[in-house]
Length: 546
Ligand code: CA
Image (tube, rainbow, N blue to C red; front, top):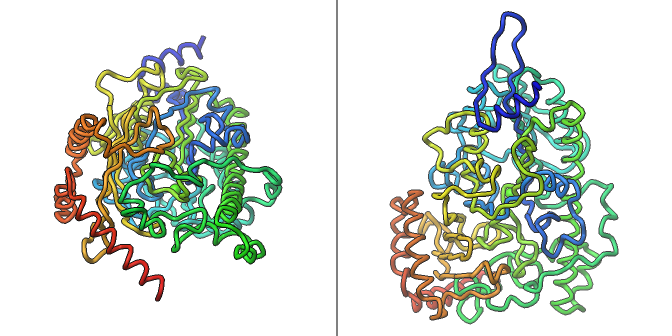
């Protein structure tokens, strides 16, 4: 009877306060939050999301979690790179508002809005694992986080056991994902069990450079990992912005699986003995070998995450807390797994843009449900706060998707387009800066191709537009931007893009050189793009000769 009463309280959304009686305090029955985030774990490498890798059964534990909860198919990041996505999750703000546009960004304690609000509301808060933001997670009660990117083996952590304690540095022997999950279980074990908790368990895996635990060395051995068709034939994907005029920038833009990108390619990670034989192989053979190497390394790290999630869930179950805990699984963004011959993330293409989002909370979420509502990572903090019965701070730009989780239905005024912007023009993996919107049916991208620093930054790349019908062409094999048949679609989406940019307040007031490019190329500017393409091609050739 008591449980039934508790469940109905939660269903109607009461924030239940701790009730002090004359005897011992009653248990606070608000749900716990277990937020499990991995790093660079693409949704299409999770079985339940389908796709070419599902037949390998890469994530049995996550698939079971999904079968007991809801899968959100259209959860997108707003800037597909580690620190910015993490900053957005903590603040509920887009990168241009929280200031973390690149890997160097910081979120000050006073801006760590989600853990601050949860702590104020009486939750016990902890973050364990990868953090990767310039300042430590000072707004959490407890933290044990990797230094910077962290190491796969014998990792070092900065640890602070309470807000009054000093941070200490510790090194732990073993494999990173095992240690992170085990540390989370240890924290859960010693917590104050009269209060609800919010635990962020953040795996480093499967971020590169991939180094799985030894027990996975033979996993997928002798198996040919299915390859995307676009690895070998990229057909109509891309534009002058990503391929150059007449494909003259293929060797320069976007790090590759095979030898295409002369500056950064996965083929360099292949074992030395095999690399020695490259000179007698075709480019296609090298690409095949590099892809198999890449995916096996990656999927072995994925399995380490999946196995450890089982330990976390089993622990909660053994304590009788699993069904009172909202378990959220996500990753800070997706990953290109060889599609279009790309590695890494950063792109607004589906594989990089999409975040996995699986939520289990059987009291109110239907088993095995799915939704295609457009969610993005500004919504995570508002949703967690909603479940905790905490008012969302006015600083947050996202919106709680709790009604979608529980009913599958979108509120009538739910967003129709998710905004995206990648700022780190041509850094690390040679991706040009771009922004755009993703609706349920379409994706419109504008590559403005310049650093926010202007002439002091990286070289300009040709501006260009891409339009994909993601409903009929989910693999984005045909950029239909220039096709006159879609002229009206383009017009409508451009108006929508302009509105969304205005709504989220990303209009480049601080970057007049970007605003000028956007204006010049909004409708036209093709000759200018061709000129820039030639300049980049020539500059890159001389760079290679150096
Ligand atoms: Ca990441």
